[in-house]
Image (cartoon, rainbow, N blue to C red; front, top):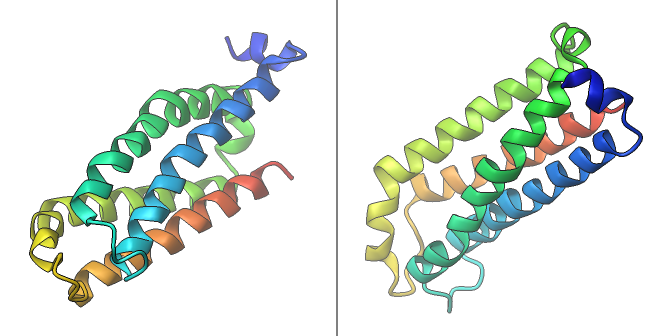
Length: 147
């Protein structure tokens, strides 16, 4: 499979486009949600926003990013396996995933309590800030892998 993708005139660029579309869905939705947690667009009910955009984030990850990322990886696994930039990106992905899990496990259920216009607790804002920084860094490291 890796050889076929690597030798195809269109397969690798098509996988890159699919990967980027997945990033748009996942990170775009995450950014909008994080910005809401940081106090922007206060008229939007955070629960309604979460129910609308977070499933798109999950679809981007599981249907587009992971499959295309795996296929992109196997085309150049030997080189990527020794690339510091690749492993920094993987570490950041792990950190981003842990932040998401911690947020949804410990903070998400309480955010509806703060819908009355009051600011969210500091721990929620810290999680949103970590999310914005980590996903930006993941994208940056992913682009650096191409050069």
